[in-house]
Image 1 (cartoon, helix red, strand yellow):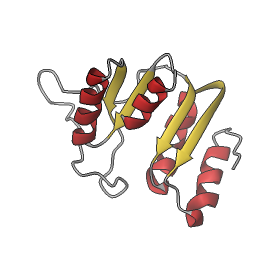
Image 2 (tube, rainbow, N blue to C red):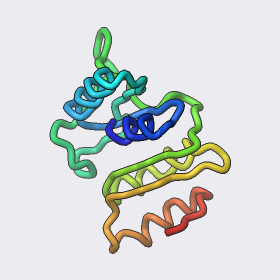
Image 3 (spheres, rainbow, N blue to C red):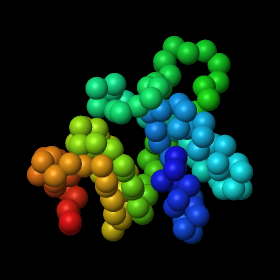
Image 4 (cartoon, helix red, strand yellow):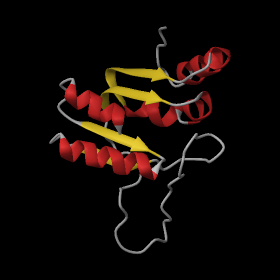
Length: 135
């Protein structure tokens, strides 16, 4: 959420914010409303408790009836000029196919939250998805 809000403040035409923490999603929605920003907020579809440092892991059940507070996952088929991820190496590596597939041709992925000892594994994961990695 906060990365999407930052992108909009810096001039992005649109932004999608994905998080596995319900409190973060609710706070991002409130901040978007307060600042009159159109941020598409979504729950992470692939969150695993051991990978995510979440306060409240939020993964709506597929059997849940009625409306959920946030749609789950990225919009199908959408590609983005810039994908920004602030996660630890576990989910960054596991989500390499999803994040690499979300980047438009000629686009970029910017990552933070990766420890130096995991750098080679992250580079390998994205290189194998056809992403040219630069430090």
